Image (tube, rainbow, N blue to C red; front, side):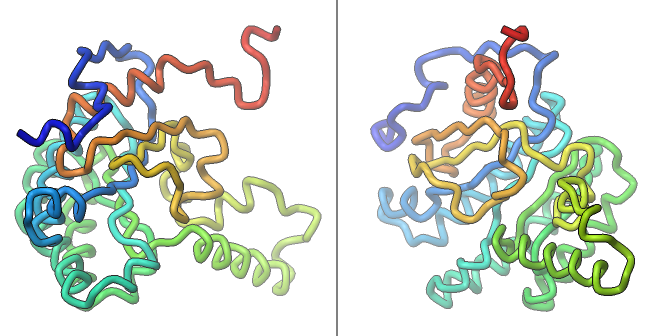
Length: 259
């Protein structure tokens, strides 16, 4: 009865056909629409966040099965602290509940957890849940599930500039030696190398903006915007987004076939 809420879901009208040899190595997702999903069902916003957590579990396994190397999920931004206190408190509890129930499945599927962001600013219980999940999955060498938690790209870039400036000030780095690789190493995605830059960025729920997410890293990413709200995002929707990605000609500023 709620099909009208997800207009333009390519997975509803087509069966995605994807080339297993051209799966994007790094997929990043701005998980949007939890609140609107709940509101449309006359539920509190936190019900949308709870359902969204279940979607994370399903999409993580689906991405791993497809052969994605890194799945980065925008879980909580540096701007999300502006939301109502009750909602923020619930969002801070979500990683605790998520990892408590899902870490065994992550280990079973050989998925390693990484987290980027200003995690030292998170509540103690959230920090513990995050650190425990990282430790419990550190021996997994399959897909990396990378959460952006209390993350903002502008703050990340400022922190990176400060780190580079400190190296210059200490005489460890010459200004003329600063290049793109220097910046890559200074950013929070550095541990993801060689997959630090997303091949595909997906945003759900119909919004078509980046919202301070991976601004440096997505310079040549393919962007896919879907009207599907995050709680309704499925493995099939993921395949449809990847099929869209595979239909594009990625030239990275050059020309196809040297034309």
